[in-house]
Length: 395
Ligand SMILES: Nc1nc2c(ncn2[C@@H]2O[C@H](COP(=O)(O)OP(=O)(O)OP(=O)(O)O)[C@@H](O)[C@H]2O)c(=O)[nH]1
Ligand SMILES: [Mg+2]
Image 1 (tube, rainbow, N blue to C red):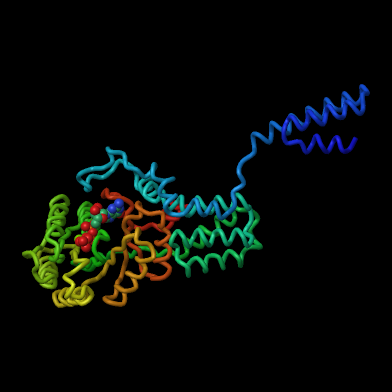
Image 2 (image 1 turned 90 degrees about the vertical axis):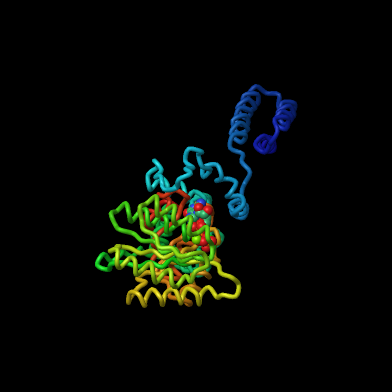
């Protein structure tokens, strides 16, 4: 009799269950057995139907993290970040109707999928902060470019506080708060300094000129008088690019002929800023020079010539970094900081990468204020960095 019950309960296919029933009826042809068999058959049907509904392939943490690797993320998140044709304006100076937070969230979709998407997956699967969960979180953070040092510091903090977590939600909230702790706040422009001189530096293609154009528009719209110095004389198109931005925003521009000495352009721009009563002077610089000329030496020369025109200037040396270059951005930040002494950072193209964790890495390793982040090509996509909004957008 017990063998029969076991066979019914273990049956995977309907035929197995029917065979077991026929054998049982042959052995015990009594009415009571018929009733029992009927009940057991019902039990089997219910179990069979439920198994069919809930049977899902069991996914291990490795497969979850493999799926979340960069190329796959590009695939899974491509649709939401694809721009609506109406959103691509030939004039990036035209503000988009989407709110600032909406643009931030939209621009950080890939990073959100890469960090919060994977961490939430791990936490909901395992429910607690045990060794395996921590290992999966560690892998997620490192592959999202949070950086090894920052990741290890975060994991250590979770380990130290593991006893206080009641559920997965506690671990998530703790991680968010710890990440926020690493982020630096932007510094404010000192309105008593006039003109406030910002020298913008960075390797080629990171978005220096575009960032300057957007900044000029922003400051002009706030009622500040802006003057741009076109000290990237290496690339003629850079000057034209700046002239278009200056026209759009109503900013002044100082330019020399192509291939002029960039230090002389910077000197003249600050001089013009002084004589014209500008509030802010922004100096564009080249990111690449003829191979013979050392970029860092050139930048030092520009910095010196600005200082000769106005002692204490430049008041800010803003290094622009491209988020899509990941940890490479961190080594650029170190090189520029050692070379000319960077005072603040801007991080562009966060909309083009799943590795937005680089923002946390840069803030914690460089300990320099992050002023602006770029989350798209529209004017509203260069946003003053707001640590709380950033963490909310990626978590
Ligand atoms: N998607 C996206 N593209 C950006 C962002 N910021 C800048 N870009 C684009 O990056 C490209 C390069 O920008 P530039 O401003 O010319 O870069 P640069 O650093 O001045 O380059 P060089 O003058 O060659 O050193 C342009 O096509 C910009 O539109 C951003 O936040 N998101
Ligand atoms: Mg440029």
